[in-house]
Length: 310
Image 1 (cartoon, rainbow, N blue to C red):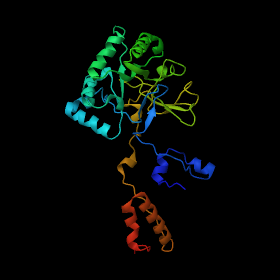
Image 2 (cartoon, rainbow, N blue to C red):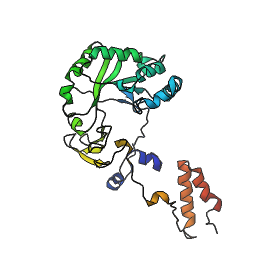
Image 3 (cartoon, rainbow, N blue to C red):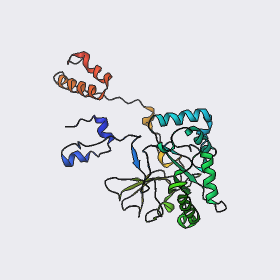
Image 4 (cartoon, rainbow, N blue to C red):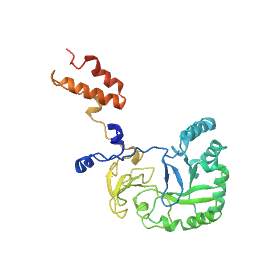
């Protein structure tokens, strides 16, 4: 029988109902890792599960590190198995800083994604070449159409879609997708065959169940901000978590419960154990604690030699 600590079992994301229904633990449960290599959508592009982003407050956080500090951070991520790096045109100098940080690392050993702002007055091929030069790369593995937030974005960005396909024929872009914000834009994703990559959380056991953390308009409160669930593959959506249409937040991924009286109280659990009931409980608690590596918990019951303190 395979052995799992309680923490490992919970981290598999399996519901407690699994045990109740099947009567046994899922022995083949696998603990995922941030450095697991996965395939993105139908693009064929492979990348580590965790990406290194460069757009915290539109790159302000990364730029504040300076080039040397940023390079050390990028190299630390790479040395620890992160093989997916992303940036965007709207992140200021981040294409250039990321290009410097990755210089000397074999290009085929990591995945590079960029996002382009779809302005009408800009030539797509010139923009792609400009971003490649800044990033010091011959190609981007993925190019996204950035901040698509209206219901008409598939038609509005047709010129950029064609431009990306042309760039793919020149082998300066490998695959493509869109960075979609808000439900009006998100509802256009199902059935839009141009997309290779749509970064949405999908239930691996039931692809009709989809969760999306939507920011909506980034600069003010709006009803499109929150976590939404679809049970029919994206045809319809229900809001399952998030603020109302009035209260602003920093983003759907940072929701939190409001303050309550419990935030100002120190809560402690007291358990009464009889002298007769203590020895078997102490032995079991010590075994579990040692197995999970909680040495302090094990020591808490060990000194009493299976008898309760007086």
